[in-house]
Image (cartoon, rainbow, N blue to C red):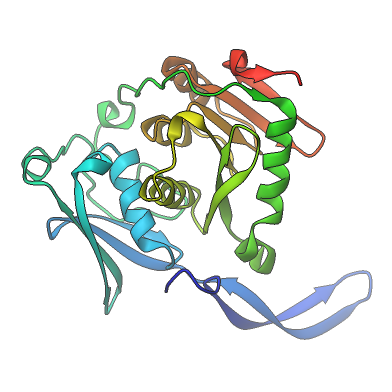
Amino acid sequence: MTNGDPPFDVRPAESWRSALELREAILRDTPLEAAIGIAFDSAPYVVVMASPADVEDLAVGFTVTEQVAPLSAIERVTVSSQPEGLLADILLTKSAGENLSRSRRRTLESRSSCGLCGVETLRDAVRPITPVGPGPVVSRSAVQRALAALENGQALGARTRATHAAAWSDDAGTVLLLREDVGRHNALDKLVGAALRAGLDPQGAMILVTSRCSYEMVEKTAAAGVSILVAISAPTSLAIDRAEAAGMTLIALARADGHMVFCGGHRLAEA
């Protein structure tokens, strides 16, 4: 798959509606889901279940948000088709390859809904979080503008109603990039990879996600260097704790009629 049409397939189904007592044969757009292997210097690292599009973005974003290596250490990403799915092989600089951290070594495949599949110990699950920089001051209206653009920009979600999205916005609420995937972590990794590859400045950005706000989403946003995370669903208590520890602004339950600020309110202006 490439960055062309949204990755979906058309499948037959039977629709039943109680009010009409009607059964009807229909065709339904369904999102593709595939096994995507991520390797470093040809050594397998993890397999994620993801939408088979924007795979290079996924590989770069995963490398950065999982703190395997910084963007500057990535020399090349090669994506190839395999009988079982797709493989993204990431070539690191010599020093990064030698120091590849196994502090969160994966022992099995990661499901599209899972951020920690294969992690072996409690220490691996909750690591020290990356502090963010000062970041921008944004208005509440900018947050709402970005939310509206996030809603309108989901081509795959509009077709299938079965995917997550993540968006990169500037401090004025203009969405500059958007990525979609069957997995919320994958959507965020794809977004971060795309933004960093495009040279966008994390210090002037907000990230918006359509999923629930779990602590891994906070950690990935912090690792990307972005200080403001906006989620349409509620945060967990650990997500709030991690955002506070990173010095982030966490906005959640963000809908068309408003939002809630759970920490870092100093980055919000009323205008």
